[in-house]
Structures are given as C-alpha cells and as structure tokens.
Image 1 (tube, rainbow, N blue to C red):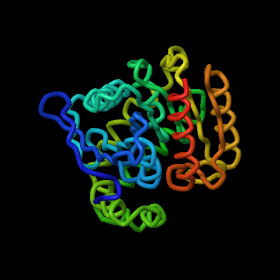
Image 2: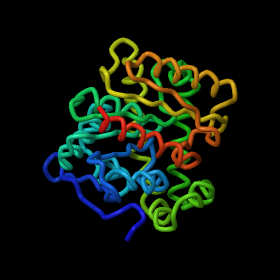
Image 3: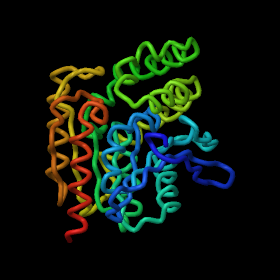
Length: 288
C-alpha cells in the first residue's frame, strides 16, 4: 500500500476531478482530517504528518486543481474557487466532523472554506500560515520576488533541475511520496498554476484586512516555525510569529505554538508536533 493511502478521484464542476489519497484510521475517532498544501505544493509534502494522523483519524491529502494529478480549473484560481473546491471535496467524503490543516497559503484557503461551512468543521490547524496582517507580503519587493521566483521555477522545471534544488525536501519523505513529488510536483504545469494563483491571491488576502472570513468559535491552532530560512529573515520570522500569536489570541478558542525544529516547512520538520496538535483537537471535539 502507498504510504499516503488509496487513490480517489473527486468529481467537481462536472467533468473536472481532484486527485486525493486516503489513509483509513487505525482507530477511527469519527473525524476526517484534510490537508491543504501551500502555493505550489502537492499532496506529497504531507506524507509524514498524514501517516501519524491516521493513527486516530481518516486522513486525506489532495492536489488542488492544476497541481499534481488534479485537472486544471478553467475558471481561474481565486481564493473563492480554491475554497469551493475544498468544500466540494468535504461534501464528497460526507464526514460530520472535519479538521482542516493548512500550510502557508493553504492556511488562508482552509480559513475561507471553514467560514463558508462552519457547521462541519471542528478544528483548524494552520502551519506557518500566510497572514493578511503581514505587511511584508504586500510590498512591491515581495511581489517582484514572487514573480521572479515562479518564472525561475518554471525554467528549472523545464530543465528538470528542481530535484537538485529540493534534495532535502525529497529526502525527508517516504520513498513513494518522494517519487510522486518528483513526477507530479516539479512540472512546468505546476508553476503555470502557481502563477495563476498568485495573480489574485495577495490582493484577495489584503482585502481580508477589512472583511476577514468569520470562523466563529471553531477551535484554532496556529503553529509557527521557530527558525529563519526559505526567504524569511530572523527579524521577519519574529514579526510573523508575533502576528500568528495575535491572531490565535483573538480567536475564541485559539492557541499558538512554535515548532522548534522548523523554518517555513513545519509539515516536514515538526511532523510529530503537528500530528499531536491535530490529535488534541480531535480528542477535544469528542469530549464535548
């Protein structure tokens, strides 16, 4: 069996499908946990956390439209479209209790999806999420760096050089997930989709300063990386973590923790901590 579980194709928008992999729970708590990746990431990055989560809950990873093995979305990659796809995936699995886990830009997607259908969401875990209060994201320098980075990754994907750039990431995954990431997650098509996402993402995120998604009393945990790296300086890391703490403190049932071994890639470098936090929310929901 694949380390990330059995494949499923989830129908959305008629002929379009999302590709998912499902690990059944060893001891089923009745909770479904769904993982949402960052901007250009595919399902494979979640392999270490997903495996540990399956000890107590059914654990689902998937590729957003246009990434990995999922069909592209001809109607664009706005936050609303991405959150709608996530909710269609939750409809497909029809679980009454769901925990959503989002990394980086995926944190914004799960917040919006939860705000749209809060009745079935029993917890949110955000791993080093993008935050609308972070001025750095909206600076001309950041936007320029993002455009250059995406274009460079497309060139490297065409030249098949991305596995060299991401050696550490590939080495941290089980062999089958690593092979999937090489094949499905390092293609020119992935970075075409990433460019489409980035066309509107920051402007939409900025608009949340005036009108953020309302997740109500859904329990929320934000897990910040402790270390600089991945383009985040030591000063920027301290600032971002302070914003994460403020957001968690503002939530009715919010919690902020720091992943001691991680920079931005919390799902890889502190998988055990992340899985433990997911378990805490799953157990707390059953104790209510």
